[in-house]
Image 1: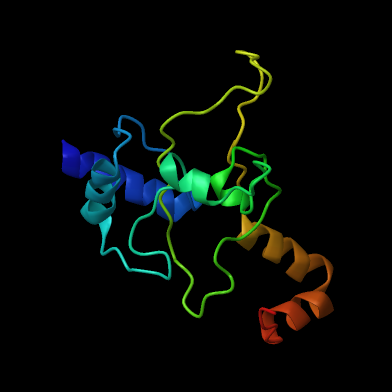
Image 2: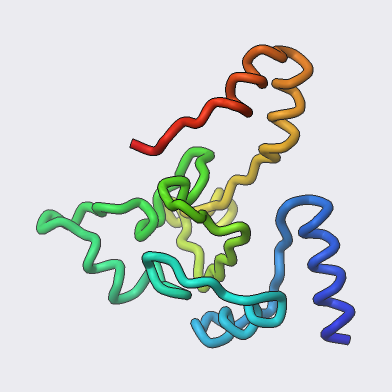
Length: 146
């Protein structure tokens, strides 16, 4: 049964570019077990797995209590790509949301830290069809991270 669920998740990941898995406990160990069930965990400059909440959150606050890095906050972020400054950015990331905080304590409103997803391949295909010159430029011109 678990193998069937893993296969279904990998098929959805291949088809849609993301998959939502529920029922995973909030521990780092459970997240590691899920990750290892689908592949090898490659370490990065942050280690193999890291926690963006709890005690670590306190390290990323200024003396006034403001967050230094939005990754450690519950702020809503615009669409972005993680880790583009790395020579070898992750091909797949897993996020284990242990608890979402309510925005202004509205139980029916949006949650803080909501994940927004965009289909970058679809966007690139639209660009290729509507502006071939721009597509050619962005697909062939190296743009280093500064």
